[in-house]
Image (cartoon, rainbow, N blue to C red; front, side):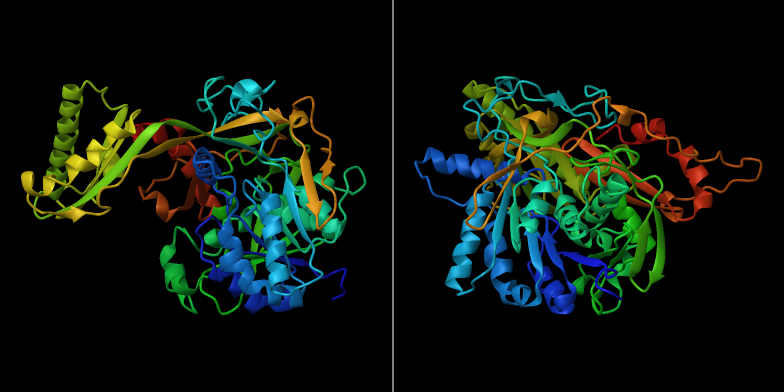
Length: 572
């Protein structure tokens, strides 16, 4: 195989801030010089809010210096792999820059100097923090913003999450910028790149744009290639989600060779020049890469499979084909792409009061009934104290007998359990008032039901109630910037976008055929005929269902209707 024919190999070692730091070592040690890029996603939607609150708290105490990036990337990962990735020529790209990509870049450069490593170019990609230049950090500071609809690409008001009021303070607001900053930094020789809030797949799309020289208006099938690269990034961005983590047939993974769950292999994509790619993992690691595990991850958090909206392209997943081409090797091709929208999705956090959660373990007969009685008594006792003190009532509260199928509401089957963790969650505008909930929970051990064995978390403190909200902002209001080494900060323009909203009319594909009802039908559980994967973004939960065999699909579609699902889950 010539160098031109060799695929680009990209491994991902982190799905979120808190994923195991050993995964990077696994990929670097196992793959050596065969690993072209090592990427990592640290930023869940709520992460930026956590970092922003920490920064505001520090600033309120008069402290100017602090760490507003993911420091664990440096201390737990990069420091341990630097000698090997430099020797092997592996480039490292991650969104660990968080709220301060430039500060993260400078910290890496200081680490390199301390370790005596020279000649390594470090880059930062930024521009996502759309509040950074606003004196008033509210939506009123923006000329033009739109709600984000989870079910329509053109009617932005349809089923959209609540946005903060125009004058309501926002903790953080970050645009999901695309891959052009990463690609530009690589073009200038960067070997380590840290970004802020880029779309997850950009960590993979950027290297592929650089390696293959894709140019808008020049490269044939440009948007199809971007779509395929985005799909590759989407498949591996959540770490072990594509190698057997969170998989419906979990027992196949738990008992897989080379350690199963205890030695999960992290994902690698081998991307070919024609846009096809193979998903795999290091040899002699646990886990499973199959058509089913990859399919589940493809449907994770995507909303409409015909219109997966990304900054650089709109990915149409309806024509994707997957095939098992070897042990733990799945070939993926058939992704289609069209011009992106004029908007960038943003992830925002605002504060809506305070919340506290307390947990106590209750054992013995009638454990669930006792838990409900104790929970209701604690709430009533605190409400009585509020009344005496002249304090407003709870904004809301929730009593959950965990272990008694509380998530299933009226569909619960387990009532006669002898072990329950009672969780009480309360919401209030006053943290001091809310502190009464844990204060009055502890005494339940001696003044309420038998079998209370202690609190799981002691006496927790109220915390800010962070609310996630998505919105759309025109690309004209956001610029991607990057800096490499000692160079100047540079600004990049956006590519073309669809000004006519043609993306609201996806191309036609043949619908799922109607089921054959002339033959006798057999009632069975959904898990017997389908795989499933769910993911949530704020108040939106996306559930993807994949037929185990195409012949089951008409019957699945007939059974899992909007009405059926809505009625089953109306208690949530």
